Image (tube, helix red, strand yellow):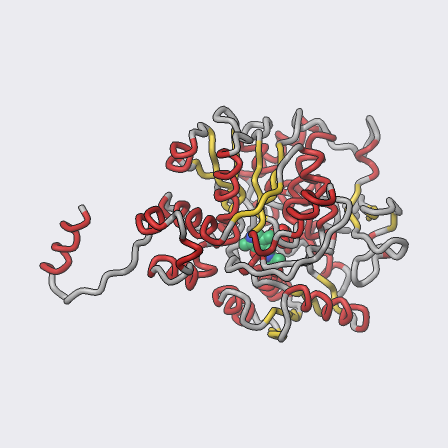
Length: 450
Ligand code: F0G
């Protein structure tokens, strides 16, 4: 059966090619920009290939009770909206997606926003949102007969790729910047059997090296320049819309690194609207770390017309990226939806992460930029109390345990970074207490904090 209904359309010059015509680095041969997956049949007002909104909503709900492996995936449950494979039987799945949408009662109260939620993508099989994209693109790699897949990564993409490659019986090559990724993520790539190379450069340098490699060797590139990744990563938009019974929240807040996730979620909501499944799209805001903020600068200084790469510095290693590949797509999403793009400091990230931890959720530092950004937007009255806001938490708290421990020990931030927030930071720190091994010592401590 051929389920495949897609083409690739260049985001820059609009040229269309078939999926198999893409160059190994997924850049347009005409203008060098990135491609987007497009489904020509959806543009027709009526017709065989245009999905029927009512029937889809019913079908996707029914699949929640199905016993088929593909229906257990929160990505492939929506497969009618990502017909990228010749046969869905080729899909490689670890039951990704179906992630929880939690309310945030404490942050809600503190910020005076009634409806505040966190879509926790860290609850995916390898602990980050990358699984939703990897199931899609790795399935394409397997269907097209590749034996090797590769990515450059700040850690989560490599963990996800290595796991899905292992499931599919493919070999995987990981390029990571030496000393600049969290241990949890590095350990995953090793555990899932990737050939893991730590390069003496940064993430952007790893991307440059890998781009050369895929031009010379038959290795399938799984960085997010691969447009099929974004097809999987758009599906949390469907889950969110379904959760709210096909109305959409007012505002979605997403961390920004290489800027594929914001692009993908924007595409997901846009397609839902174009197909008549929802009436409008949410405002989508992108938050970056102050030391890795090329999109903030591009939109602030150049209205998104060009992007100056920066040398990236932040302890939120997942988003330590100075030259993001998908910046044009993300800029379009922010501009088209009326969102904002702002940056947050290292202290703001650390505080927000501890606050999410104190809600019983936890996340990795890169995810906490969303709450830190929301606080800033709220302080500027750019978010009103009546809005429904969803923060996209992208990674699990256990990915970067060193960061969390350093924060609670009080050794993460330098004194000058804490200025003005000393009392708040002090109140959030919960360092482990060293005691004699007696009940009296423990009970005295409990009394002391009660
Ligand atoms: N949050 C986490 C936990 C991430 O791992 C990343 C990106 C982002 C946010 C940013 O998403 O790049 O789509 O804007 N991590 C990549 C990696 C780059 O290699 O794992 P983005």
